[in-house]
Amino acid sequence: MTAVHRHSEHPLVVVLSGPSGVGKDATIARIREAGVKFHYVVTSTTREKRPGEVDGVDYCFFKREDFSQKIERDGFLEYAEVYGNLYGVPKDEVRDALKRGLDVIIKVDVQGAATLKEKIPDAVFVFLLPPSMEDLLGRLKGRNADSEAAVSTRIRKAEEEFKCMPLFDYCVVNYNDDLDRTAQAVAGIITTEKHRVKPRVINI
Image (cartoon, rainbow, N blue to C red; front, side, top):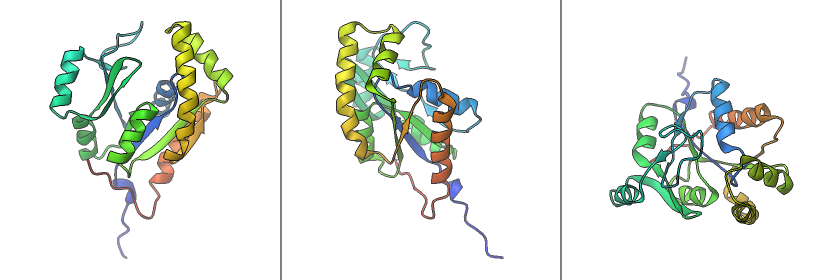
């Protein structure tokens, strides 16, 4: 019998993006709770920790000087300044996970996703969106993490980010009352990609 090549052996890079407050962190956490095996890349940032956040778990928090030094060492797959703070995806962490045969999920804003589209065109790009702008506004206000002015800025930016959906391979609506549905949709995308006749081959 002729051996069948298992395309699932090719690890994926899944880029999950969407507007601020749409629920990217919650979606990733629920996918993990469902038993899907992947490596989540912890984003580096210069912003201050919010209440309840843990360094190295939610983000890797850097002083701006240290972040800049890592940029000079070409330590980020992509980085950008967002709302006055720097955010970056550590390159070595992605490479190491792929070498171990692990699928990788990277959470970035839409600007970062556009950069990664150029650098890793064979990654899987998923856009997470709210059911409505009113829903997104309620989520942002409910976080109690931003001023009214900051919330307004994030809403205006979200309206611009929606125009970037053609850059993505998939879009998933995240309903407030059905996070399981959202997680299942993203997990289903990963499963579907594992069955491609021509697998995505990631080179970084």
